Each structure stands twice: as C-alpha cells, then as structure tokens.
Length: 277
Image 1 (cartoon, rainbow, N blue to C red):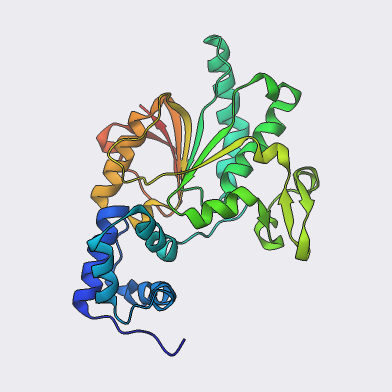
Image 2: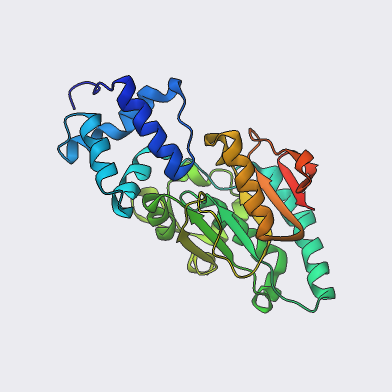
C-alpha cells in the first residue's frame, strides 16, 4: 500500500450519507482519515482508483453483499470477556434471581436474552457462563439461551468459531477459565461446546424499522453501539427495544452512552442500566 488515498469533500459526504442511511452510523468529520484507512484496502482489492468510483458502484446496485463488505470494513469490533464487569455482577446477583422469581410465579421457564451488537461473541458467551454458574444443574430445566446479533458478518464468523487470544480472556475468573475454555493452536483458547450451543448468532441491522421477534425479551444488552449513532437514531432504537421487551425487563448500555428517561420508556436503575416501564 503506497500512502493514504485522497478523498474529496463530496466523496466523503456522499459515503457518510450512505452509511448513515443504511447503518445509522454517524461518521463525524474528525473520523474522515479513519474512514479512508479502513476502506482503502477494500477499494484497492476491488480495483477502484477513487472513492467516487466506489460510491457509484454502491449506489448502482446496493445489493446486500456490497453493503456487507462496506460495513465489515468500517465497523469496530472491539470486545473482551467480562467487559464492564459491574453489569455482569448485577446480572448474576440481582437480575437473574429477580427473573427466576417472576417466572416461577408465572409458571414459566423462559428467560429471553438478546445481545444486540454482539461483536465477536465475548458478551453473549460471558452471559451464558454466568447463567450456567447461577442455575447449576437446574439450567437444563430452563429455556434460557442467548440470541446474539451483529451487523458485521466478519465479526459473527469469528464469534461462531469461539477462538480467542489470551488478552481477550484476561478478566475471566480463573475457575471459569478452566471450566469453560479449552486450549487451541498458537496459544489461543476456544470456548467449549456447552457455551457455544447456548448462543444463537444471527446477522441483524438495528436500523430495520421493526425487529422480527415473535416473543419479547427479559434482558437486552446493547453496549457501545449507540455511540456511533446520532440522537434521532438512538431514540428510534430505544423505542424499538421497548417494543420487543417485557415490562420490567432490563436494558444494559455502554457507560459512555446515555438514555433519555424523560420519554417514559425506561427508568434508571444504576449506571448504564435501565428497567423498561
């Protein structure tokens, strides 16, 4: 690669508008160079000499495959196990006991959990680990797996393989590390089959007008996703989360994100944690 490709104002604003329309990601002016760096390899591999050529290629036929390549190139898939550990402490010590009590009163064994923006799988796998620890041998009596979705097909492929470097699992308690991971090649570790079998991975664009779920969720994790959205997109997403959640359900967001409680959809519980009204 010989230097960074140049992008004109018109090319940048055209691509930014396209990305905002399809993915809700609001790329600010200060991220211009980052956008160029992330897309340059894709453009050169496909023989495009300018960003204008690439943009015209996209709008001539905005097929799913072309858009998947675009979002795979620009999306950030940074995650690790037990990230923002206070969320997981609260899940284990407060949320799961509360949900079990509620569901037993309803004579139900269902606990529906959605990891929205699951990246490379660390979050949903962490949730399943904690559920297995919480329920113990009774876990098999519950319908309590995790739906994990992301817009990036590249991230989802990594998630489904379940192979991680040591730095990704550095915050996993030693007992869980030995219990739920096996050795893989090159010093890496692979999540065991029990954990993987309890996570269902699907590709989903959170910009869809409605979500294709027949049953509502008790818990939604959507952390460090909305930081890329503008305020209107955030508001729309929170409304859609509200629509697919049960009253009294929990929503976990990133600590650098905020939720407008004045809209009377959710009430504050603790930092980056809310309950559906």
